[in-house]
Image (cartoon, rainbow over all chains, first blue to last red; front, side, top):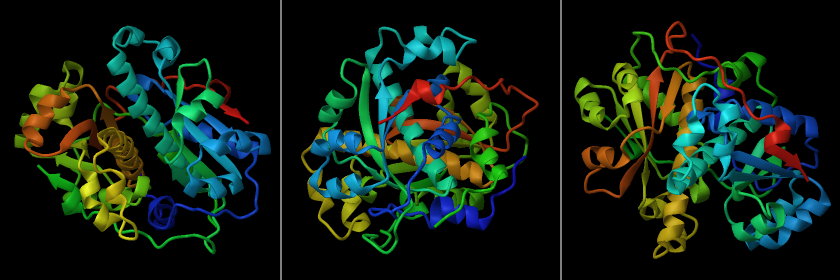
Length: 197
Length: 197
């Protein structure tokens, strides 16, 4: 049985963590991105379906490919971020279920049911995107997630000819709290968002 | 700037954490559920939209309301779990944006664009559902998330006459690793799921 994590860890993961718009000029290594994925991959998905696919855009060439599809408010900060992760969704994830869920014929639950495929893909790839954010914070990195971009344009340039579609973006680096960090916006109280039955 | 969390914390959050089907006969208090929400609420959402709504079902009466809508494979374990959280989505979340995003008229970005409302609601409530899972683990609790249930039935009984729709369920308690804990299924490698550009 686990114990509650130390208060400092809860702060780092949730209470003090912020969405950063500016990052320090400190690189994020490929090894860190591997470590990040190797934590996030363990988060739960329906039938272990693991539909998330990620492009970690680091190079100037990669950023230039992304640039035309960023909304104006997201452009400069994304071009400047050490890494931009394109969190994407494989809408043929079920073809990997014989590998990922070997103890049952889970593939057959999906074949021919496009609505179930699409809902399962979007829900579970999005869960995995949240695991990426939490894993980054657990590794001492900061995030700036965004959904303001031209998904179809990104798909054309990064995922042409595949069953993969972009979902949202996450800038990743070491947050610079001296620049463009907005005050924390209010959250809904327990009683506004939840009830006990 | 944050440091990487201790290896034991990374284990608890990701590497050793498992999806539990059986829970120890140890209750989860209302105070713990408040603490859980008060961590999860800080996770980032688009324009701080915070569209997740949660019903924490603890009572025998609440469980009986849920029972007819659970898929057969999820029924017994859910009835026995200390808490079942119904993670739901408010498809009129934008009406709360004047409160949640006070520095801009974010409500106007959504009004009249039902497709954008629905995609934003589903994506961000799902992100928040993942934050609930991670917050539970951070508090020393275990989870059993599920999407196998009759969403329309649950909506009729728990959310009638509202703009709220069920998304997925999470059983919450102290996992019993001596019962119904399956071997960890394989995950996709970095090279299968990710690339660097």
